[in-house]
Length: 485
Picture 1: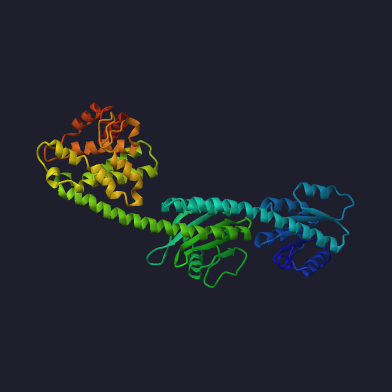
Picture 2: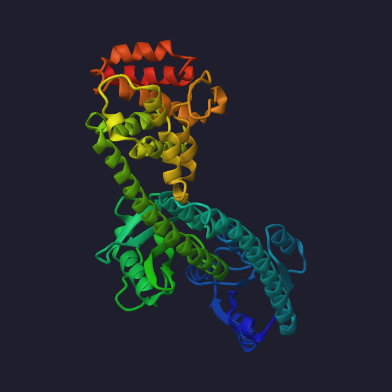
């Protein structure tokens, strides 16, 4: 163990014989350790609760709580904190009992100071090895976590995953993500779990500490027993033992802050936990900014394509609002069919954009009041393929293309453009087929007036297994019956 490592190690020496406590403390201090002296178990407990302690060396026989009592408490409070016990009894029964309870080693009085130093050093080396192993295992976990975080562009999902992983990796009792709004004020975005009461994270300490971390672009750790917080940051709430806050930042921008706490009677955050969480916060900041950029680009593309949809409907006064209505029916039906959130979002936008290809269809054909000729209908049948070509250069809409292309396929294989049948047709396209047909039947068209809902229901039922997937039709009729009651 290097001198620099020893100097960063803190030891509590506990002995009711003050002279012995002073001698051991003086010797270990001369080796470079930082020493805290306690003359009974209660004093030691207060020190351990309020300081970052790396090892406890305690006598067994003391007035009040014994060294064994102290050992039991330590192993409940922090099972990783090494304890060396000392005894002056000629029998080793008590020392063996201590080892069974989790003591690292024991000393038999009288002992040489060199022996104390050697056993403390071995305990520290073992502790360092355990920390290194813990760090390695958490780095492996961190690697897996960062891969997961970088795999999603959904900002809500990303926030929830990031905070959940942060709380678990740091073994916190609770956490919160705060983001800066346009007015440069902190807004609590998500908490895990919602602790104590709704306004908990509005406490002045958390707000001011988070803003300090953001403005200084560095992490900050506070403990209940210490008064070393930067100027202007109040004391922690009474029920909080330890608090850490990490800035969420990119090289050019500050996003917000990750806040984590441990409640009273908990061990303070370790250096390993601070380092791991700091790395996680840095990686997550990049993922969050990427997700925001992705969302902005996607929204801009969607506005453009929505404009195309409106342009199509502007060519045909009878279809004004058709795509919006199909989208609404489709979302309700998809939820009723228990599709995932991702699938629902996918089919939602496919519903909005399913007729975008009609922008390339002659306006006279779209508004023709009578029956279409074979040639005219062939032109109409081109709109799914044309819509796919319009969207094909936009990566965000790759998943929508099969739904848009095949929403006019028939369940019996007699539809267009590819004559797919049954399970060959994407499920989302089968849903669109039903909702598109129902909306068209119940709306005015240049060649007929809108049908009553009941008539449209009958047609859907009649065309089960022919034009429509029977499962989708039944689900749609269930939804519509519920909504009409």
